[in-house]
Image (tube, rainbow over all chains, first blue to last red; front, side):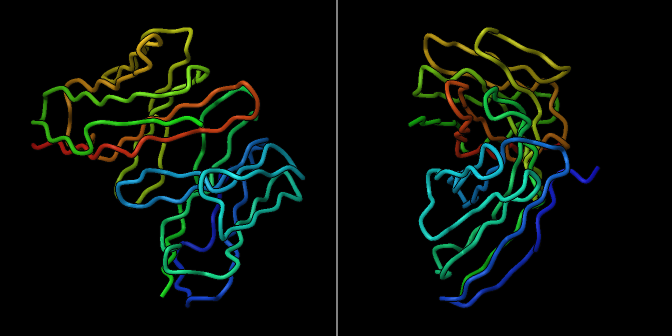
Length: 114
Length: 113
């Protein structure tokens, strides 16, 4: 049982490049989400999904796209990287969309945009 | 939307002393309040949570209290140990619709041996 797996762990991008951060969970969780973590700002919600085929925007969605074609996978796409997107990104999943429960986090991706 | 404020941003205590971290929330519909611990370079992990039908919950040296009227909740760590040093995040969410979790900005706790 791997839990939530994120790849890559580290990434350096040039301004304007695009990339996809991968996230997979093997716990059959309904709810998946992406956060960015910046110093002094906690964890801010980028996008979330309550099930396959259903996604919605969080607090800071601009510059990011998501899709959820399967229950297991929830990739995050950076369309045209900007230095303001330098951050640590965490994917998380929870059992239920309707009843709040513990969030299980991936190990994080440290992204630097130069 | 929900707004969660967390204080203090940093906290230093002597080993064996108690530590208290406080959070306030704005949405009266919030009914689930988890606390996460994040060690340096690691992922956040749940240490305790409380639901709005409970005023206090305890797990060994860790306790959480909730005051729904005042819309604030607190984390209490007793008999602190060096391994308690980490960043702690409070959060709030509600089940009235799809779950969205709002996190506080974090408290860096340093336990001095």
